[in-house]
Image 1 (cartoon, rainbow, N blue to C red):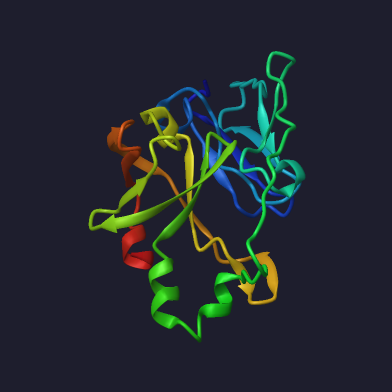
Image 2 (cartoon, helix red, strand yellow):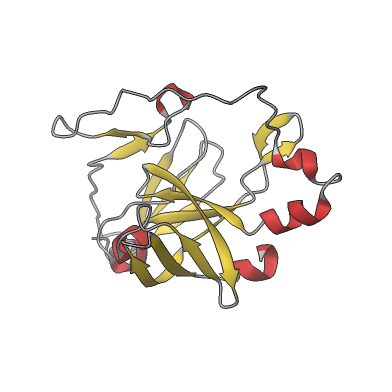
Length: 207
């Protein structure tokens, strides 16, 4: 828990992708699972506005990378109680592998490209990659129950729009924007869906 005069900033090595953690973290959950940072370096800066106030913190877990650049579950690095997942199932593409960056279709298929902006990349609890998409007004997003089961999952998920290569030939990500959940409205394990309302106005930009 941080004193009301203290804050922790999470950023990349260049001071970009910065987010600020206050109090007991996202939505006051007390988990303090911060926004993810693209790249190989994360800088944590703890500061207090009052000189005689001091805050200590312990990093008890972090996620980094994707094993073999294939598996959707990222490495979770903690103490020995959590073993790292190392096995990756075989993956194949039928016939020729003709997939291209989304940016390649911006001119040739402008309608489809524009509609695809409503699809978000989800990083759940810093470890799992999923997708979701805007489904109507009020910044509602639909995803699978196996991705987000609980309110805590929703609040500890980064909802990232425009996570795509900057050009047809580049995998450099330059234009992504991350949103937080405002609330988990409804989830259903049998039908495998979860409906989340996002904080902010993603639908105006991407819906």
